[in-house]
Amino acid sequence: MAEHAALGFDPAPGNPAAVLALARKLGASAKSLDEASRVVTDLVSHSSSWQGEAATAFRASLSRDLPRYLASAHTSLAEAARRLTGWHDTLVAHRELAARYEAQAAAAKTEEALTDTRRLARELAAEHAAAARRVAATLNAATDKLAPKEPGLLASIWHKITEDPADALSNASAILGFVGALVALACPPAGLAIMLVGSGLSLAALAMHASDPKFRKSLTDGLTKGQFDADFWKSSVTLMGDTVGSVPGVAALASGAKAGTAAARAAMAAAPEASALTGLSPGATAFRQAAWSTSDDLRQVESPLTGWALRTSTQETRDRVGVAVAGTGALTATLDYGPDNETVEHSSTSVDGARGVLEDAPSAIRKSGRVWSELRP
Image (cartoon, rainbow, N blue to C red; front, side):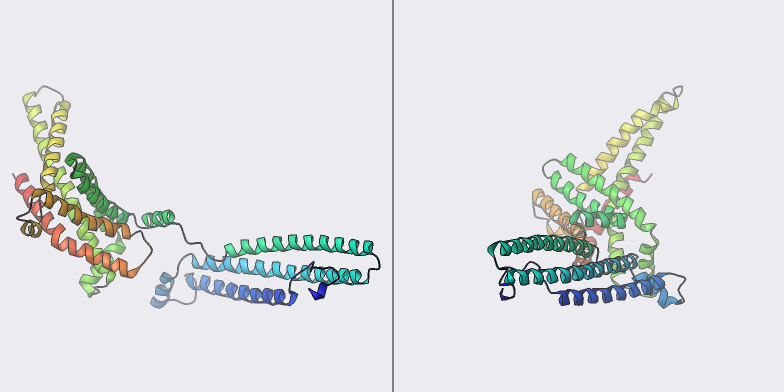
């Protein structure tokens, strides 16, 4: 405060040299980002002089958004450097004026002259503070554009769903399977309806995965080239889950179709002069009843391992174990929407694979055999 003893305060605090040094560093960083942006843009572009398998692999590893982020960061840093340079000039001018007011206050001969000088200094302090706030606001705005913000939880989940809708259907099916099994403890019809919806989602997921070239490639590379990597195992477990999950739905449709067709034909045979729509109502009724009956029967089919392990247990205990098994599928499906973590992903694949081999697949085979024996002519 000795530097401004006559005024009693510093009207224009700040260090012009430090501000100028920071502005120059930001300018140099902006220049480096501009060069990096141009290099990455050229590398990503297929018109680049770098061609071949290595170039293709490198381009595939780069995010499509990286050039845009680099360009945005360059623009932001360049703007921040420009604003700081301007603030440096303003700071120098304000400090020169503050020094002049300090000299006037020290030389004041009367109290009135000292009061006038201090009033001017306070006006300078207010103008200086306002200018500093404006610069801070522009710097904050520039900083906000330096890098993409991490998406919120809902935005992240939605992004994963839209990025891979087939996996989203598989996950939804697993979650509905658990919810259906849980609801079935108190209200079997409602639980069965929920599980049927989940089975339908598994069938849709199976169709989407089967039509995805990337998904098929991860499987064929493992089987034909011996590339049994994480992608192969994840795809294999997903395919198994979709397949076994769709069995109840397919079985219900097949059983309902057989019964509905037979009922419609019988109704039309009984009234040969009637219109072709005569068999529609009895056919639909038979379809619904047969599909529901088949689904309810299959819901109670256990895998051989579970049946053997719980052979002396009550039905209530068996049902609760079934809910717990379905709960593991719901848990791994939910974890798929958490932060990316290789350990969690590999663990989820292992849990799903073990459950599929020990529980879901044997149960699906037993269910398929039962339905086939009923559908055979």
